[in-house]
Length: 276
Image (cartoon, rainbow, N blue to C red; front, side, top):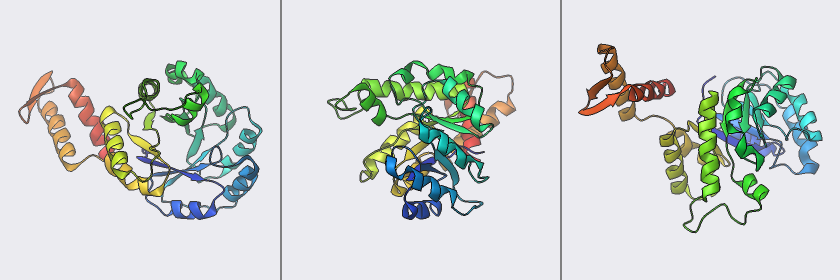
């Protein structure tokens, strides 16, 4: 399974939004049974997903189930027998133990854990490295975390994320890489601010994230572009790989007039893998 660049949330109780999403350009769709669906509508949402026609091709289909320990969580798991479901998105995960616990019920179905939505979750990011489960991706979220902490805002006086949420984001990135899972950046909530989305997505890609959550179809295109290596980046990466292939015993080489070493080689190989 490739690593999706764009992960688009779609409320599972809206047949209109689902119909638009499944024919769109997102790499992965997350049919949401949790926050975007009111408690009274969750049964209807499960019925809609259960009655959808099976399909092949197009975006990957993922389901965000309700948190472990809830009645809806147990009912949500009944939808996972569909062969066209690529994986599960687990909200409110607090440690690798939660992922392992879920896998006991779901077997080898890939899991995308949202890992920074509670206060306790910030202390367990390294534990995902030891999860006995098919952990595919890890993403972070500021909205639920700010509510859990009793914050009045997730932003500082400068309009940027406050330190606590920057820390959560960085811990998610490091925790995902340590666990061998895809690091996925969180949502950009202002759907009208395309320039802001592009800037945030490009910054995330530069830091090491390889995908981003989306909450509106209009965000998919800018996200896909931000996480797709450019022709210049691909050419430079190929030059680095070719230089080290020509001199396999070298530790440092000059490529395009700049010194590169083995960490640059590793970065180049990873970029070319994403481009493929």
